[in-house]
Length: 366
Image 1 (cartoon, helix red, strand yellow):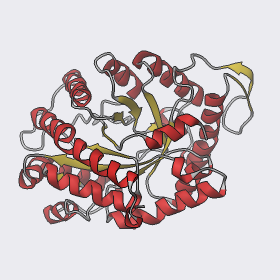
Image 2 (image 1 turned 90 degrees about the vertical axis):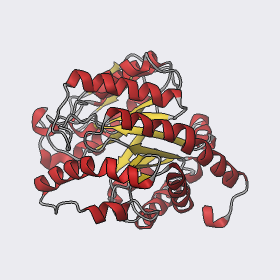
Image 3 (image 1 turned 120 degrees about the vertical axis):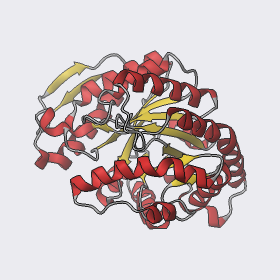
Image 4 (image 1 turned 180 degrees about the vertical axis):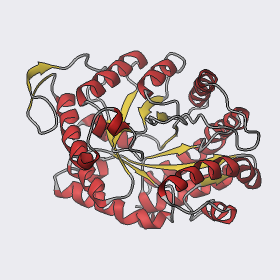
């Protein structure tokens, strides 16, 4: 474990955002903006997140008509020129259908452009469009990810790479350039809640980004326990491995306003996915239940979001929270206000309280 990784865990609690850069009609007006306008809005959102002191902004990779972000690194590089401090990450890079050499090169380039602020969250993805698009067999879904993750790690550790594997052409002492500013480009593993994915991240000593977008937080405690247990079994210090919780949410001045503003967009987005996958339509009462302290979604006033973050920290003792505030298409001005509230009202209180917990740990908060 490197000193860089150890220092990552000792940093103040990190709070950030992620987006899939949705391009769907407004559920109330039916209006759909252009892709160019959506990107302009996105740049303003990331710039504001940096200005109000948020720590991380991530962009997901999707290859569908209703998302703009098929090339997150390009958008993140554009954001790098407008920001100073915020870290810029994928959320996630669909590694199974990509080439680890090109992934590393793109994010190393982003690291150079941003002055050392790039990260990768590698995952298998929640949609499958990239597999036929790039000529991969969906039956190799898991095998591809495991093999390519190993190669990505090897490239991070070695400028010259020799490689033999089932799914990629061999490499014989070939150089991979450019190299990033950071001595070790951060690679996280995005996990959707399967034990196999947890074990993979832990065994390789990689930080884990755990998606919690449904159910009760306590249900995910065993995954975190498994992660730290397996990490120790493989010789990694669990205390030195950062853990992120990635969830949906929305913030307004009051909880009622947060629910009223976000529910139509979330319902439209989740119902569309539900129809594709044979799920049931989302009901208002379900959404409201998910916004309680023991629900999955961070929807409410700043004080309620603070309470919920601290509640989950007592379960997971994690080091980072990333929120997706734009599930579906949200009005840009309302989204900007939510970002401002997260950075100015929520983040300072959470960081201060968690710093106290770390300084004087309570057994219930470990």
